[in-house]
Length: 106
View (cartoon, rainbow, N blue to C red):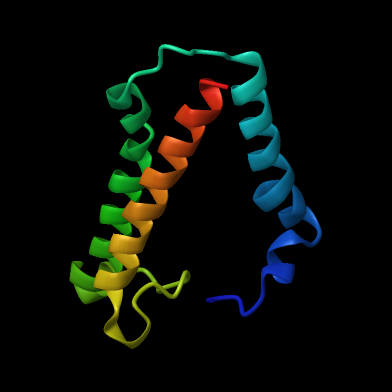
């Protein structure tokens, strides 16, 4: 939503950062790094970057002193709806972790 269209995220250098690299990483992880015994707890370790960065981002756009704040470049605090964005990030991160765990078991 912050950039208006997904097309902007998959042009030029962003094509590799937002599409090719994540898909290649998912493919390599699910094909070449089989771990059929991956536990739920191990899969949840993937939430660590989401929780840490999500919390840092929230602090820097909402609670940091004014002179140290970041611009809300993702638009997660649009119309002061940071709670919805934060919960959606956590749910999305959890879904990705569970999806990757499922791919490991195929």
